[in-house]
Image 1 (cartoon, rainbow over the protein chains, first blue to last red):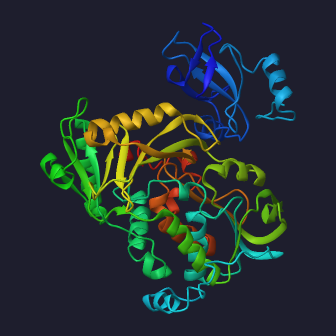
Image 2 (cartoon, each protein chain N blue to C red; image 1 turned 90 degrees about the vertical axis):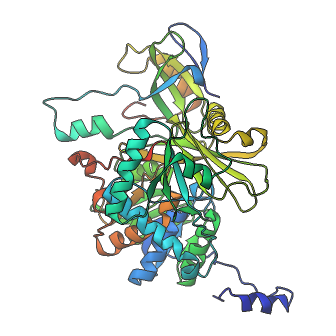
Length: 109
Length: 414
């Protein structure tokens, strides 16, 4: 069972306490954007076999959204971090690099 | 290929069964094929079979990284139905269902198609309206379904509890011509027929790269070396994004785990398929007597072919309230498969940004029932560049806003 530590309340929450919110760090496109940008924002999702960044909500806990870095091949969790950021913090990236040298996600390395 | 028949059985019985042949060859790959299909599951093998049968294209390789039919083809709950709301879905699923009717004869392989009937329970007012609408749509589409009363449901499935603790059974959408088939046999039957036409099924061979020259596919690099091709078909379900990435384009889909399980075998107690979408579970009884049970998908991306335990709990709870007798059953086996889900929950059968490369994916939680129809349409698309069955399932429909919104009609169990 997947266990994520909520970065806000510090609770180690298991899956039934959480709600999966899909890909992290999406850039939102609306009026004024091109058709391609709007299409990608609505429908294109990263679907990596390996390192992935996601949004989760501590639904049956503090209720707050946060981010998690996870491996979709092994279900290993590299870490969780605040929702108030546009990209993963350096310590999360370092933790991933330690276990998955050479990982990539979008244009992150 | 020697035909299977009652005479073959008698002949072999008289000579200690020494004359049976291998059902398909396992050759080494050639340097070049006209068509390469990646993925030897049901959809891939069906595509290859109809390429040969309908279009005479037999210089074909079907490449599989694991073993034949070892992915979702061997992991589903074998339900076959075509009671869909939207015209494009009804057309392709009904094509598939009708091909299932004669598949054993066509392939000379017993796929054990059993048109025992499929009941989709309506347990809320919303579902009643939805299923009545589907029944009317099906009447126009030429798909035989009817909306039946709770009393009729009880007649068809005596073990059902109409007055469950959470949701009563208020009626059901009944497709009498739906049913089940032996999932492995579908893959094996197609494989045997493909091999007989001279196609090469290459197992334990993983595609590691797709070679694109001047915007057109030139071949694939595999663990058994490079293989050239004129046309490439990607039919790899949950791994479609990975393969598309190798060819340099993206797909609007995500891969998640879907689980199923079977109980210990018991005496015959239910001779139809029942789907309860509101409480989230569906069930049928296999010929061995096991209750075959399916549930919902996990909410997060996953490639592990393992699902979350709480979804099993949810499914079993739903079935306990719908069929109180199953509460005493032990579950024997549980497993997961990786399904590919698109934005509108409908499949993609389409040309791609790479020339002569075609993709068939996004069947999500409802792939098995569509295998022959999907293969038929994909073969037509690959051979002629156009198929009336696939027109609406293009990869461009998201850009154009022409969704095939079946997620409402199909509910969770697909």
